[in-house]
Image (cartoon, rainbow, N blue to C red; front, side, top):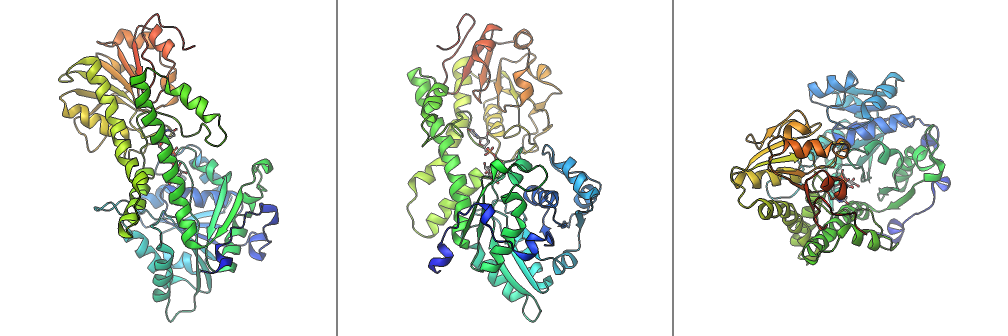
Length: 477
Ligand code: UGA
């Protein structure tokens, strides 16, 4: 890899070259896979003016998308999808070959779920890549958006080479990792902190930079010129590593404050105050210092696993990264310990969980801390009941009962645990909650409720690394 390829281009977008087709908004975009990342990318590129076709081979999903419905919960996405579809800029098809052959750029956004050995399962990715190589015609830039193991770019190039042999395609690959958070994905796509493009073919990277131009310059109708993101141009391996390094750091930061919260629990210190004060240091900053029951979701745990697997495969010692997932698991069990010490034996105790999704504004249950906690409580003989505004049942835990609302869930409960910080839980009438419960313990697994307000309703308030409160306790000074 040459020095040129390694050079980071941090020019602000106003200096991004006017790439002919990008500048004219004529780049035809195909997006393979209409899961989370693919749908958000397809809708967002259409929203900033590009003609986009989304490719989906599942007939049910396809007909839902064609009728303007999104097959998962993401605020704002369905409305925007309907707008861009009505404007004629976004269509959906199952005809991968047809869509790819007439596209200038093809985003591969298929899932890379964890395989049985913890490594990402690349089956769908390899199949899609081969299909692209076979179908592509003329100059086509193939962009990886799925989160892929470091080194995937080279494998993709080899698959495309092999699959396109004998055809007229002129293919180039670019790595363009995504930094979308579930629940705020459209905003994260349209107003990102940075756009990362990795590739060894300069023209191909230019073409993709042109595609991002309305976002880089914030020149689309709802753009905010004060929020112009940085463009990072680099080589493929660096782009792939940036994605993992970002997620690994965020996961590590959360886990760090969670370990501090355990110290606070014993020391009688308040982790929220600690995080506030530590976060005022600009080198550290407050974001992702939210202590609680730990991170969940499909990304952090899986990406850390991918990093440590890379370390194992290449004999790179990674003791810090290797410690993050196990420490995150310990944090989930802190809640069970708190319940045990508050209630004694958990056998036949009724515990109500408020929230199941791994975070608010999503219906995603992948690696959700609530599920680990519910399984541990059930394992100790507790009756566990839950309420979540969106998730209505947990397939892997058939014994877990769900109720229609929070008040029904807490009725007769010996203890309540706040497991997801859905907005509606802050508005609960805690006096009513206290009167409906059999016991009086509320464990705030997200350090999210007002301790004094909860305690004033007659409940005993406990949280993660925060002083326990009961009626009569004043606010922290
Ligand atoms: C994460 C990253 O934030 C995105 O930048 C990245 O694109 C995405 O993974 C991905 O790789 O696809 P996401 O998993 O959707 O996004 O959600 P986050 O909002 O980052 O939260 C992850 C988990 O950390 C949640 O369980 C959340 O409750 C927890 N968290 C977050 C904390 O426990 N404390 C905090 O201070 C912040």
